[in-house]
Length: 117
Image (tube, rainbow, N blue to C red; front, side, top):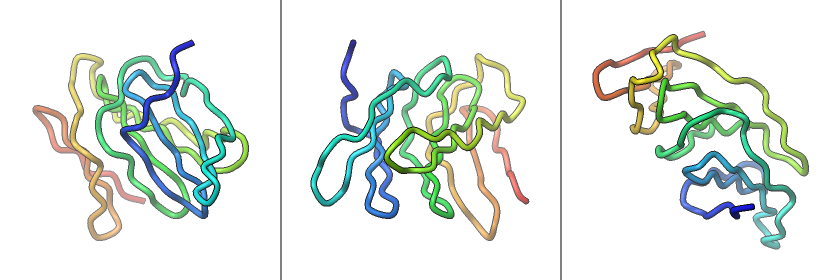
């Protein structure tokens, strides 16, 4: 099993979520550095953009197709949701999600998406 290599991280309520490019996520206690869990996110593809922290959740977007995995940090992996944009698998997303005025913007190499409540 390949270990999670730090590079993309989000910090929430004393937990650090780290996601490797190959889709392995790990959670550490920020204060002690103790690893609490490490698992695959269950979404095929790669992750390249920095995570976004919103309302106590960490959002990380998949490179191919732009699916966003929403994680609630804690002692066990809790995937709150996997949100699809409806993009094709060959559409590439490498930009970090951007929160602006209550909406989240997602940019692929060819298209700008806006998601709101």
